[in-house]
Image (cartoon, rainbow, N blue to C red; front, top):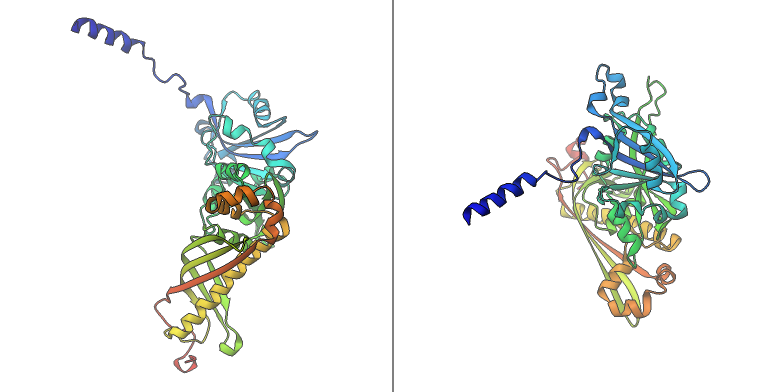
Length: 394
């Protein structure tokens, strides 16, 4: 019996051939980023930024190493798969999407119906749903034509950019959830390329940066918001973890500015139904430390720190209220997920009263913002460095 069992095991071992879908890296070309734009005759234009195979790269000259790091392919089709198939016909390698990091969507396409062109991502087995999304003004493919001044290529620059400062990270899965879930609309960071204004610069530097965001009413882009307004959105969404801001003291208090850096920020959104009237209360608790002081105030005095706290509380409240006005009131866009939060807190009332007419009710929804800022550190010196002791306001 033992001999027969051993024989069976040996036969089974000989039949094992490894992973059935194993792919040789030498047969693949890695897609790093994808740009989606409106094409001609109602077609979709797909532009792929691919990593050039190592064996084909040239490092002999630093001036051309960046261009040799990536290859750009573009084609039009009825959908993403159709356009990618047209690209594949021209290549000796198979397109590989599992390492894709960014999807850029052009403004003209997003204003039509973004959802119509994105069915490829949740169905194809390779593109990860953690891939990050960005919007661009005009065509998205133009971003790929930029020679990065900071990284080896523009894909690397975008990849590092998305985790800095704002923590403005929107992944494909976030976008799909906002598209399909009741009581929330998508928002996508706006990516733009800025150039140096110095005319004496021999070669104009190009830098990719997040300059704001695009507001959606479900699957259609309805408006853009600027950088500060986007910060207001992120405060409400509980996504501010880094960043800094400045407040100005009135002249009667000595004038000057104080700049603080955010250490931590937590937001709590509470829906309230009283007398059959719905309202939303937002509470933002922020800890920060002072990073610069040009006032004449004595920062060792608790009353001065309290005044600074109040100024920053007003600043954050203004950012949040500006974001609410732009999204909720002007564009009827619930990028904050107020409806989703109401649904979670009052499921019966949501189904019976609010769900059907949420977009009609949204602009008139009463939203109050309360901020609490706590300056926990003031640095090693309590006064502005240029000041003499006698100049400090006590």
